[in-house]
Image (cartoon, rainbow, N blue to C red; front, side):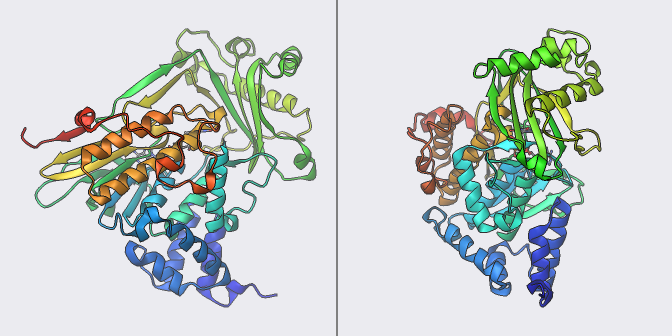
Length: 489
Ligand code: FAD
């Protein structure tokens, strides 16, 4: 039988776009699709409408119906509410892309910049029930076609890489511009007729002349823009290890049960047996079967020293886990043996998957010290031009991976931020906007799957649909310090 895509080059290009499995492939097939349909992806105001008119395969039509349903939510006011806003989103991680999607549904022009050229993280994200529903809805928009396996296993999870691919495809179809290989280096203050811009590398890239009034930093834990302070939360020493093994998708592998999270207190015998038989001493372990066989575990320092993974004991966690103090081969062996034991030796030929450097995909992380931004937002004004700045994702609050807080709290913050930008688009006074955003931010670190609303179907960017109690505990006069202006100075 003939593939329907074969009749029509644009249908074929669309098919390739939906199936693309790398950042580069998605961008390439998207640009081919636009060429075939003769649509300029920079025409963000009309892009989706034109795409919808021109691309009418049955698959595309089914998608448009779902997109339209989503876009008709009253919060977006038919994409008119932010029609005058221009947003720059820093980082094409899951939270940057998720925020970009919401901002474009509000009608804003959205440009995302990402310094990397590839999505390479095999690691798997644990999802809270609401994120499963959110991603299922996105899947209904198109992700099912993009990633049929999503959320069909015994446990609900998705690899970071696959999640980025799903969100990237949705964002592009909605008219978001996404640039890879573009590194943010700082903000450029308004001069003369020009508004706020970004200093980027390469400096000659067209994005360096893009002027915006909303700047979202979703650059992960390592970059927090100027003006934002962070708090350090130091707990007891916690050493995380992640490892990915090749999934050959054989029947034998399919049989092996996933481990949604075994903590020491709940299964003392398992951890004792592991310790006695292998010398490996863990606090907890998680195993998910996805593109790879993914394991995340928290290991005890003493056993890492004993097994030669950590060479020298040090009081400071940073020195302890410094690259020079870790024996990579011993770490691989440790992770391999923990994976083998916890799956009862049933995963045949445990072979490490490769990371982006072509090495065995195993890594050790320090969860002893976590950072969180003191504030989620601020407004900067120079020469009469205001810029709303907000943080989302790991940049706002670093997560503890085994609990899945990265995506769960990351997406909550993405929605809260979109709600704030909506108020910005509506012309609400900036101190009022900041006060509301900071009040809502205070709720974020307390959120759990239990204390957030269970009525997932009604979740929207309005915080009241998600948090049980939204009290505006912070008043406008208390956020005066988040308004940085040259007026009257
Ligand atoms: P990220 O996913 O970190 O995305 C930030 C993006 O910003 C990156 O793509 C980065 O390249 C880009 N960026 C940074 N600086 C600049 C700049 N100057 N210019 C342009 N772009 C920039 N969570 C888990 O739950 N389990 C795991 O096993 C796990 N493993 C991880 C492994 C690694 C190596 C990392 C970095 C994170 C891991 N996480 C894990 C965390 C998880 O990925 C995040 O919680 C989740 O992706 C949401 O993050 P985000 O979108 O806020 O930031």
